[in-house]
Amino acid sequence: MDYEVCRKVWDSQIAAQITIQNRDEILPFYTMLPRFSYFSVVLQDILQFFTSRDNELNLDGEKIWLESKGVPLKMYIPIGVIFDLNNEVEGDTWHIVIKTSNAPSGYRTINRETMEQIYLQNLKEADFLKRKAETIQNMQIDEHRMLWDSICNNHFDDFWGINKKLMDTSDKMFDSIPLRVYERNRPAFKQTLLNPRNDSGELVTVGHAICQLLAISEILPTSTLISHGIRIPAETPLIYAAKNLTYPDNFVHICVLKND
Figure 1 (spheres, rainbow, N blue to C red):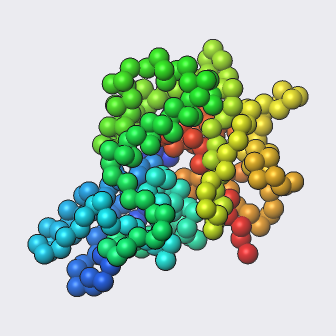
Figure 2: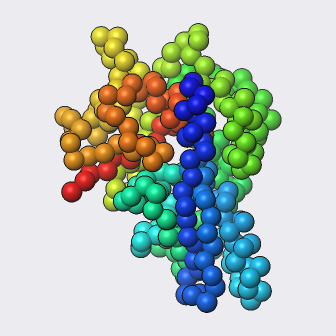
């Protein structure tokens, strides 16, 4: 783990302007959204902002949904991944609308408690890929809870004080790398078993891993690999990404954006 890289990744934020559907008289809410977090974590404070300014405004956190540029925002994906997948320019203010009409078919509004369960399930899946879940099964339940609380409270040191156990390769290299790849206008991410080294013992690169996962021969010059708002060189060793560029769920999330 490179502490400085992990710290900068954790501190990365997105400027956002949030409005309410059909309520132009209510001033927008401006905030900096942490990339590593989830909408289920930050949404409560946002809703309280709006309801405190309009006593007649009834925002049911179980029924509202989020949209940007006409695209519904999936609440179970980290905030940074959603932004990278749906926005053209890093640094632009993200315009998000809280929708109070009926959600699109298949859309799922997720509260904080459910998001915690999804997060822990993803964490267990990531550790299963890395070392058959040996590490996370040996951790205390309180440690699982502290990881989630650290995300909710934006406590980097508390999080990494525990998460370093899941990243330790001093005794054994990861069996495979937890990687999820996203493409714009595709319904879901893709993932598969990816070894950190190839048959010749060489470190697998991010580019080779994505080519294998997407069943393509090469990363086209017109494509950009993005994670945490950062352009990731295709030659980056996959193991480096797995130790320094993961989201708190221990997955490397990379968006493959095709530039026309």
